[in-house]
Image (cartoon, rainbow, N blue to C red; front, top):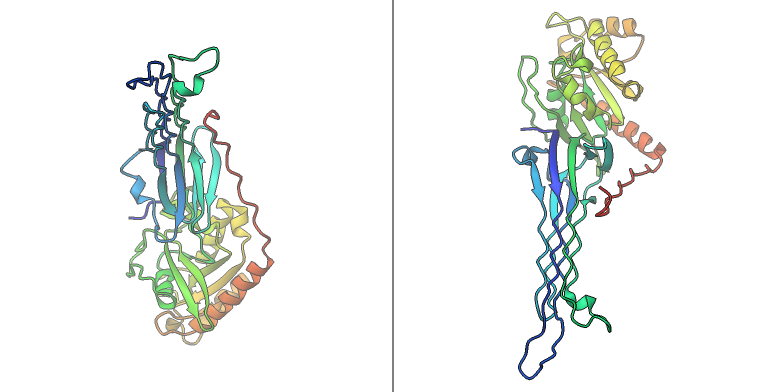
Length: 349
């Protein structure tokens, strides 16, 4: 099951309490204080992992708590610190503080980590409070509580190329032909119920990531169909590949289909609509004379690449063009300023 948004609560471990103890040994009548410090509580850390592709693991459990620090003991023994709780999430996960409605971190690189909740500090034992004027302190310090946060995790897939188009435009079929991905393919709408990622491998060790975004229909930006849930996944893509079935085999009008998707992109986000777009006319094996293709290009006043995922027509030309366009955009991109981590000291809540 593909899950791309969850709400959870995290709590770092409390610090252990300091110990109040006095040395008691034979032949040492005035041993003095020997209470040890408490251990620090474990922190809550998020890690972006390439082998995790959904937030499903966080749907059945709301509260996640790191280990508490152990209390100090006599003989000046310090309690063991609690272990950090490391939560593994997919690359592309955005961590949001629900109470402040503020982004804490955007984990958009594999192996990236962030400490979201800091563990409590262990309390000092009475040994630490001994002074020349108070040689037998009869008190110890309690550990501080670990930080708590209410979070919302949102996953936005990271892909170089995003396939968009009406249901049955051929997005899943194309993805299965140019990558090793195996999305569900059938002759009825809404076959694909979640985004699929695939890596396009070309000669010369060249590669790029493509994503099939399902469920876009007219009204998707306002919640119709499945598009409202998945439009966000193409916000990170560098290029949009707009697939249009120009054959008219199913009775649809390719011109209306193209304009409907363009309108949905514009309604959802002007930045999304402004992304570079490559128009791809699919199922060209059903229009061998390219009559419908010519009428479509004339109506929208734009050129389209002709392909057939079934016969393989035009696939090499498409993948080569996509590679060069992705490479060109990457070369032009400036290093992104990472989102600064929200202050999360033990007393910042």
